[in-house]
Image (cartoon, rainbow, N blue to C red; front, side, top):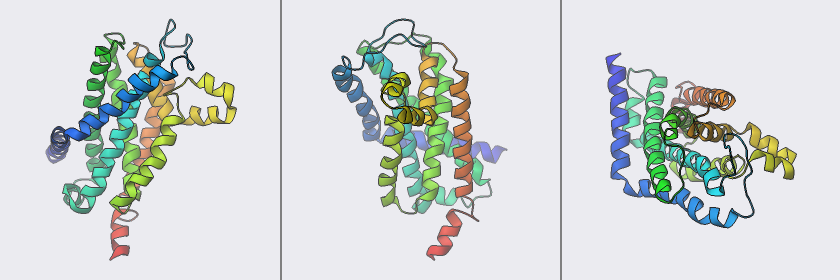
Length: 266
């Protein structure tokens, strides 16, 4: 148990130190959603006005509607970037050594997942603080209530990134695969527009958005920011996270994933 906790502490500390020293990563994580919030939202405000809908009790601006979606964007991209570092570490970094340690492989992956989630939460709160400076505010207590939702969504999106990293053999291939996954997840969700608007234009696209796990992560965050609990969103987010993590563990199993690929390359 002590060895497992030492590994957890070490991996989280290493991920935080890497995040602190990589200022460009921090700035990139904030610039992307801020552009959507301050530039694109201004142009889409008239065309995509949002009516009264849960958890909102009155008409809201478009900037306020997309705020939870942009929080999800931060966690989504962080999960992918964390997995990108996993591909590097697995080939020539610290994870290459850790995966050969006596600790269970699934525990090492969970430690990496928790470390990435902690970093994503730091980025999210920095973004929410900047948004408040621009007058885009949510209920004060919502900033505290959203923390469990951020943990659940961050774990789910990070597990998706781990699953992708378990299937990628070369670092050069990760960028293409990441774009193939990230953009459909983000645009086919409720991050930028309500699902009822999607249903008015295309039933098939609405159904795709409704089963998208990123949609449920965004809705979980949206309701939590307004001190409301969305049980369905939480259930689907946890289920998707468990499935992604289970598949990632199988992908890193020596009999199926990493060690098998190494043997084939040799």
